[in-house]
Amino acid sequence: VETFIREFFDQNPLSHVGIVTIKDGISHCLTDLGSSPDSHIKALRGKLECSGESSLQNALDLVHGYLKEIPPYGHREVLILYSSLSTCDPGDVMETIQNCKKAKIRCSVVGLSAETYICKHLCEETGGSYTVSLDESHFKELLLEHAPPPPALAEFAVANLIKMGFPQRGAEGLIAICACHKEAKVGGGYTCPRCKSRVCDLPIECQICGLTLVSSPHLARSYHHLFPIAPFEEVSVAKLSPRLPKACFACQQTFPGPGSKSSERVSCPKCGRHFCFDCDIYIHESLHNCPGCES
Image (cartoon, rainbow, N blue to C red):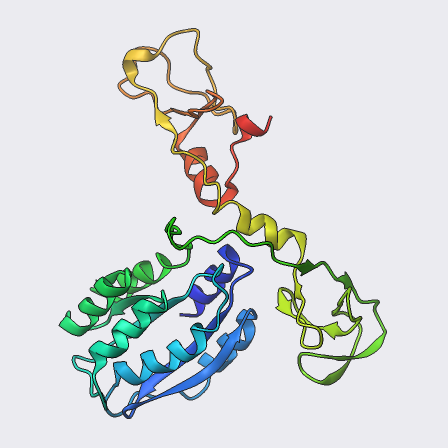
């Protein structure tokens, strides 16, 4: 889960995460919605234990109360890590599921035990995904699949202008009270451009004036999800000729010549540049920009 939290914020630096625990028939908010991975990981490393019955309805009611206040331009998602084979609820869980559906809350479940009907029904109704892990490595793989943001449905997508501030880094050695922790700290931090209050980390919502504070790299890392690179097309052996590039455009690795069993190259559908398989993976999973198109 720690790996997932860090990967999630790496791919979604402007997003917020909150953690809810389910045990003894009740749900408890472990951490509020926030954008600091360290605070969530610190809470996870506390003395957390599994005990008693699990109540899916209580958990959904709790997160529904938090997420229904999220502005319409934001995704409302719930990822449930569920190991119980049943749910012990105080009321009608089906009604709660419909409330989540009406609030456009997308619920997904990663099961640690056998498949259960109620979890499958929840995911089908809210448009989420339901998977069951086979072992520890498979569980990690299923969990990390939820790090990239899901595609937005056209009927729910709302175009809004969001006011943001780009704060300056505070001078070293300067003593100031941070608005997020209400503590005096020496050096570092960031100064809100609107109200001049001090915050520790970015991105964050200013506790004084409510302005969303970000840095330009945060916007850049979120931008590529809006315009993903089109999949590269594999060049067939039949199309190989001496006129084609002899090396990968990115790493300059030499391609096999005509007469080989495999071309071992792909081409960008926009710029037509040729890349090796390793660069293809790196471009789509890490770089998120085509070197050929950028040049």
